[in-house]
Image (cartoon, rainbow, N blue to C red):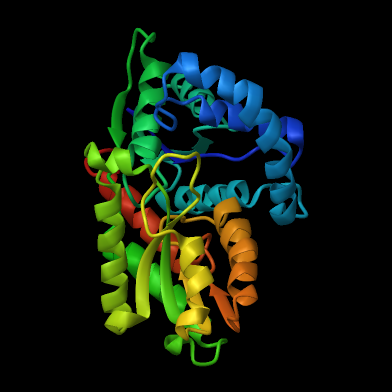
Length: 326
């Protein structure tokens, strides 16, 4: 039996150009797990209004964070994570990374592994918290990819790791490292900012909000934060429907007026820095907070390729591989 592990992220444009961003957004926003509006209504809106308006604006934002080596930060860090896990697992386990949208495409990676004889696959979504828009979308794509094969692989899908002790320790270590360089860091207000989700999805049974709350509460306990020194917020709203509240940008706008001149923003749902952390929070959020009278804005760096996170990730993969291989 040949075993493979696929670490899966959502994806990013191939380059920070309007054309590349438009192609990426079309794929992303056409997924009914992400936008569950009737197709007859959504298609004309997407292609006639949203993509023409949003693509050039998003391309400009991506240019703010694009790496000098020509890679999107999300790609760079995901590749580094896959390389580290591959090294730790050894030659008997094939480790690849893939993107749900963009390149390397999840379907392409799966077919390549099948063609090379991998008949056991662990699909590992790199999202600590379950949501239908992430985990379920990946499951959908995996089954769409393999369903026409005569010989189906044995599939496993890794569970969310929102309360895993090693993952949480990696985040706490990041805070401790930041505290060595920022004076009086623990006197700052702590915002735990998670990617948003339509409120309707939670009402229909998505466990995402509850899992985010568990992560934040465990981090608060580990960091010994006072009750009135932290909050859970949600960022990256899209469209006009009601999304999870409270909103991160609203908190950043009002914190200085409440006397909190210093803030630490932690984004536990992102294991790799990306547009949502580096630009939305690190640039737009920072400016919003400072413009309202804040004086110290600290964005906790993503887990990325930190040693504690890579060890945690390898441990999680090993646990999910239990019973497969050496």
